Length: 211
Image (cartoon, rainbow, N blue to C red):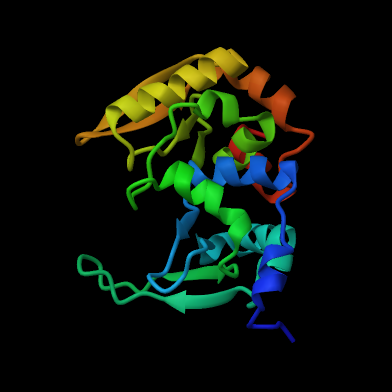
């Protein structure tokens, strides 16, 4: 049974390995949410995925379960106003811990997620791998990968493209949709992506890089 409370001393004992930090950088470019409650000085992580990706979120839970006081659970949202359908998600949260505070301050300096100016220094192959797992989609027809960055500003998306170009030599363009901006990685860069990420890509997500 999971412990649902930690003492202050126990909270201070947690650290993040460089590997897990690299993964979190990638996830923060995707759907990962980091927040602080008004009553807490420490940040917690909240992982959420649609029910179709329950195998993937179980994989994430196995990576981060030592930081958690709960197991993944299924939640259902209110019916969609347009379709009337009820959409289910799987989520889990970590404890609020000091080891997550640096990431919170980096990505949420004013309480809203931003892209840090030094993202090019922070993003590693492992981070790129989990960014694609979390927010990437693969087009079988033209063999392009799209990173769904629609929640970020044009300037932030341009910053991300610079990081992808300078660090990994990827050919990227902006895909504009209704005033939002996604990143399209050219099919010409697919061999680079596959060579770089195939050894580290979780098996259930390899289809996102055309494997």
